[in-house]
Image (cartoon, rainbow, N blue to C red):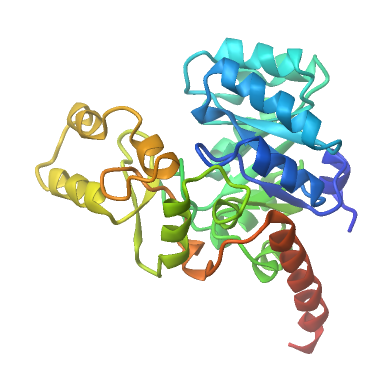
Length: 313
């Protein structure tokens, strides 16, 4: 399949493996790229020297295009961007910040820049900043999210209506049928996160991967809007958070409960009680842990079958 997204990234299928903190190391990114989609290393959970190591290992593990996702609210941002340039990474996905800050600087060095947004307003700002493509993410997603709780089904056509550049849909997408639905609504491709958390190559702790498989509809909730909205599995930490919310806490009190490295504790180290377990609503449709190549193969096959069946409706 050839379209704007496959041509932009020189990939076979218009699918992007999301750059998720504590889940998207070089093993996942290289496996994704080797499967014909775009793999992303999640820089948000990496110190600069660790990021450099993951980029170098990824380059050895694949000769296909891959990129780095950079949440711009993280410290050491200048050092991270310089490492990306030094290591000759050609694709960067930015998020959680103003796209004007780095887009032109990166593009002047031959790098394709994509920015992640959760609203029409910020999609237009990113387009005005000159990015090469947009990821519009509905609130079904895990990880950093929008405060307005706009669903993917609603967000994609509203963004498409006003956007002139390529559009990638994200949030609640783990199947070929969902991919087709998003493309019918106007997306040129899709970004998939949660499904790849539950993959063999994901750097997530095995215990967290199993939680994803066991998660059912209603087991997650969007929270922490006062800081950075995330969708969490309702574990012990989440219950503590909910109890605090009943006292009308200040952002400072929320930060105190959250503490440091809570996401690492949960997703990377496997502390299922006191860790922060970020995952999308689509986890309710994820029933197994399997290699990335199988996930991509199944998703593309389902997309093709669904596309051929649409005419019968």
